[in-house]
Length: 141
Image 1 (cartoon, rainbow, N blue to C red):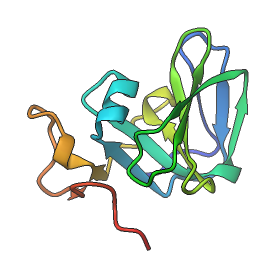
Image 2: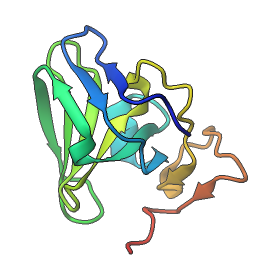
Image 3: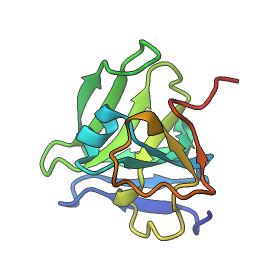
Image 4: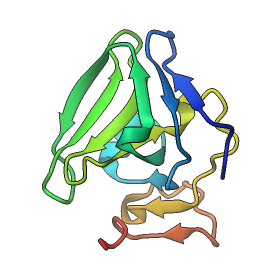
């Protein structure tokens, strides 16, 4: 799970671009209802990164999502022109962000290795038998 640094990506219309100056801590597929609705897919695949390793150019619109189990909101950031989801900032831990893997210029090196909120996964989602999976979020350290 490594790509050539910097990792680059952006939105569908090209008005938002980003560079990632570090490899992700983990690539996680989140099956919670809010991530499913936000992604428009069975689950959202996210590169969990250090906030300081992410540089974004272009204007991001925001939606403050209050459906987080921690009680803290998740700020979902997206291109205000084309609507592509780009980043989620968990207010419970603002030192990390989730970059939407599908927005990478080359997402191939980044399959999800962890699946979270499998308790709300759709019945047809394929969660590999050998994947690290959590019924809800991973346990806090």
